Length: 322
Image 1 (cartoon, helix red, strand yellow):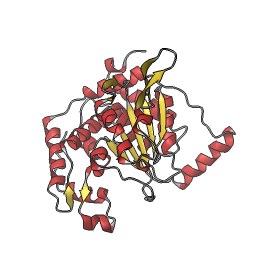
Image 2 (tube, rainbow, N blue to C red; image 1 turned 90 degrees about the horizontal axis):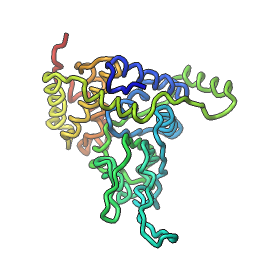
Image 3 (cartoon, helix red, strand yellow; image 1 turned 180 degrees about the vertical axis):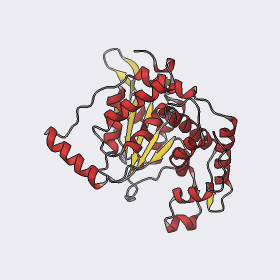
Image 4 (tube, rainbow, N blue to C red; image 1 turned 45 degrees about the vertical axis):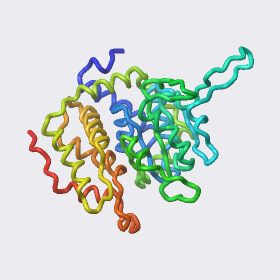
């Protein structure tokens, strides 16, 4: 197969479309969410799925790994989970009498961190080096992670008892956050009809591409052109969050980088090798909303960060575009 990094943006978009088509065989009526998660993968970032139980968060991660040929690992985060349960540990090999490193589940291509907010901060931070540096250090020895590497973390927004909210520093490591939501009535009917027709729970998905193709897509994203006017627009949007009186903390420069990376991936998914203002607008909320810290009075009232963000950037003028 020709490496995706060597073909035109249109061919890369076609491959992304085939991946989404295959994913939709398992997840009905959520193409926009599936596309966001896929954009996170091709933009070489991590994804936080923050939604209610039973809306296919785990299924999305597992299906994405199957369709893209990535090695899938899953960790169920619990209060007694230890950092070594994620990263691995140095153990004594009885046969050789030597200490050897036994890799943990983080050494895969796609790690599902299920209910990530159910484990204490000490274990949550075990993911930080892996997510940011793409490596783990155990007993002073650094071990690089495979490439590509994606963390898809899930959490339940309505259950707070026995949970440890993710600190802002860790939230900022996620390229994007999104919600799945309940399906529309017609989509739920289709979901049930498909289940009855196939006679089993699992959907047998086909592998559309391999890990090297994913790396090729990531390289193609890096070649998507960004006009200086788009860069200025991204900066203006992010800076607006830093001066809003409703916000205690606005988006950081990492937020600017995340917004630009996602906008380039969004442009590629539409067969373009350049970013336009609509690409930036399309990914603005998933890229920035989780990075904002609301003032306490708004947080107590339950005002969504997404609403504050929309009002904050409403007066930022997009560059004219032909």
